[in-house]
Amino acid sequence: MIRLPASLERRLKQLFSRAQERERFVADLIESALNQEMGSDTSQPQAVGGTLHLFTDGGSRGNPGQAAIGCILEDPARGKILREHYECIGIETNNVAEYRALIEGLNIARLYHPNVLVCHLDSELLVKQLSGEYRVRMEALRPYYDEIQELRTTFPGISFVHIPREDNYRADILVNRALDAHPSPKYDKT
Image (cartoon, rainbow, N blue to C red; front, side, top):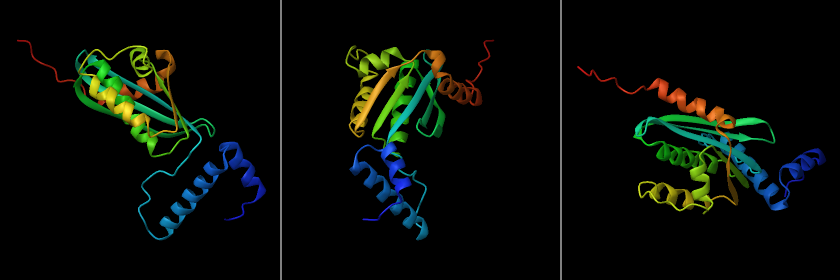
């Protein structure tokens, strides 16, 4: 094993409490550096580990109507946004948009290999369904719910937290940016 300077060891211990996590992180960084040196594809994000925060939002103009999603993945330890994503998803309900935003966010977060992922959503329905407090009654939502249940198993630790809409304004801005860039077609009523 490579011996690291004491200052780096201390910083790694702050980020990763378990030795196995620190070793995996260092191994991933070395592998990434070697791949870069050898000209391999480096488009994949580096592993971050630790705790990451995911903010997602979905919305539609009309219900159903033109819909979009927005996701923000951040590393709170470094105070850094790792990734933002937004896109239009066609004509959907607001609940489908909320589910699809979370699915997209989870797929993005997986690339960073967090030990703990805290998902912040302003949809009380989703949080209560994912916690088991509410059942999924609308069959149209069942495939999305099932996909999230499958994705959640890929994270060592994951939680879903309901936050007020005003605290999720950054993800909401992304949703509106996507919708503004792709407005619904206007129909002539004459």
